[in-house]
Image (cartoon, rainbow over all chains, first blue to last red):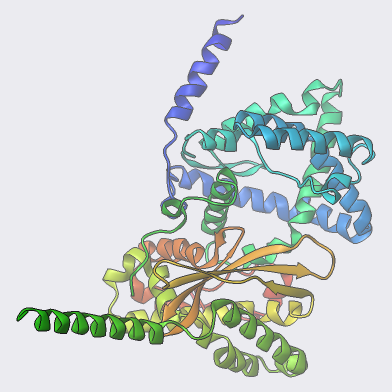
Length: 239
Length: 227
């Protein structure tokens, strides 16, 4: 094994240990002066590329087909959820999610349909960033990644780690084919977020809004909908 | 024997004081349950918009007046203003807090008017029973916004507080993403760049308003801003 490869886990562990806990209201954003231009770049890229494509997709592809596509991608990347359930010691949920995955992959025609939800196996949202959070790793700095959008130190490492559970890693797709799948998935995701454009437009400072919303959402996911009050609410006035 | 009478008296007094205290507390507890406040308010405005949608689209000021009359009284706007000012509350004079409260409320009402007029009929709101917490002074009401186009429902939680015997809304959360606390971080950033007075002035003059990147918002704002 290459020397650097052996050192990598140590480096990652050190980086994670250094991630501090912050409230979404007092975020650590030391890279704001870099993040803002990247955000502006992402917004421009979105305005001229991703958003028009997503809008065309919504305008021309009927809703049931789009639902099928969303289901397909959800199911394709669902092994990540199953593995992270287990890593968070949610073994029962992991078993249920495995059942969900098997059911949708077979009866659900490779994931296009979602019979599992109909029988009460609801979709869960877990990833490695949440797993780190579950075991006490703080989110660290807020980051804006070119083309990928908001993240944090912790979630970025999680995102890289989640590649281990991505089926794309184990397919014999060429680079071009992988780009195509990722692009299609991006359009699918973006199409679901079109409704939120107006929300972002209705903010005094969209950058700050997105930062708070992203951090709140991640906190909510880490604690499965019940984040501790000390992170959710700042000190409120008595009167 | 002699000491019995004062003791009984003392117990009676204590009892009376306790009873009085409980009675006061009972009077102070809001008569209308929190979920009722949320349900009545949402129902009233949807009925009102349905009846007057064309009038409101033609005359926004009539719509703003209705919002001030029907919605605003159910919101604890002084408290919301204080929460949003947050750490800057100490820098602000009571007059400034009042001015900020009004400026911020108007900015929100004006910003969301179009959305309300557009979407009032495309959703159904299911209101669940409220949960009272924190010494009976706070409550939260979970609701589900069911979209008629079949898209996934959105869970929305209303946070209320007891304001002189009435439940008033002070925050709205969608999947634990809080509207008020989100504006708090944005206003905080603006105040840090200047000061409270300047932020109030800019809110009032429309300089500090929701950014307008969509085509529709652009059309709604024909003149360029001064400065």
